[in-house]
Length: 255
View 1: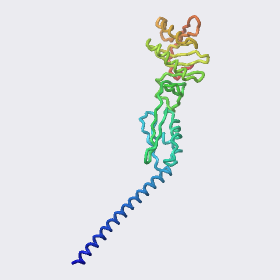
View 2 (view 1 turned 30 degrees about the vertical axis):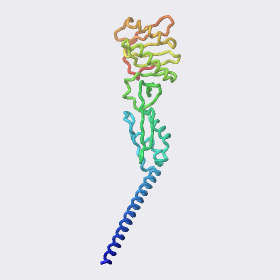
View 3 (view 1 turned 135 degrees about the vertical axis):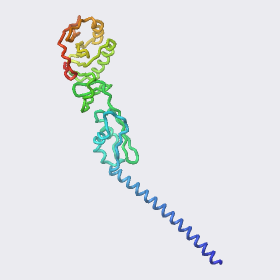
């Protein structure tokens, strides 16, 4: 009977050893598999195969496909080799992007946040101005016809936008609104109103002269089917000329 007990004891030790060996082999296999998977992911990142572009901002004029097209030259690099400052600059070349933030997101994504341009006026026939007076040129302006059109003989968008804001603050309480504003070569101003009247304002003392005009504007007689062109560029007064009211569109306005 003793030999049977010894045999059972030996078999138990062998079985325990076999279980331990099996567990160690399984653990080694799992670690090897994890290592190989990690190596493949790393290698793919180095080859630039798994990088996905995710636009995480809610935007009206910027979409993910446009951003991917801009970044195509950069996406051939590996995940850790991506030049984030260069990518940010590429994203900011999109006409509707005011600024962008770019970051890596493990394991395979490039996250992009953008702040869109906020148009406050049109600039000339083919561009827009943002709230700081910077010019940007989207390919389509069809939806921007309601914006005030600004222009200048010399490119001075900040000065023109500043003058517009000051003029609107003066005339809006009178129920008047500006359709377009142009700065002439001598620094004087040509304004078109929504009611089709036109004002020519001097380069110097523009706002004080405008205030004096507003005090008298309601008493100047209007004529049927005619608009007024009021010229304040005289030292001691102003001139009024009545013109046929042709009802031009903003795109037709020229100085």
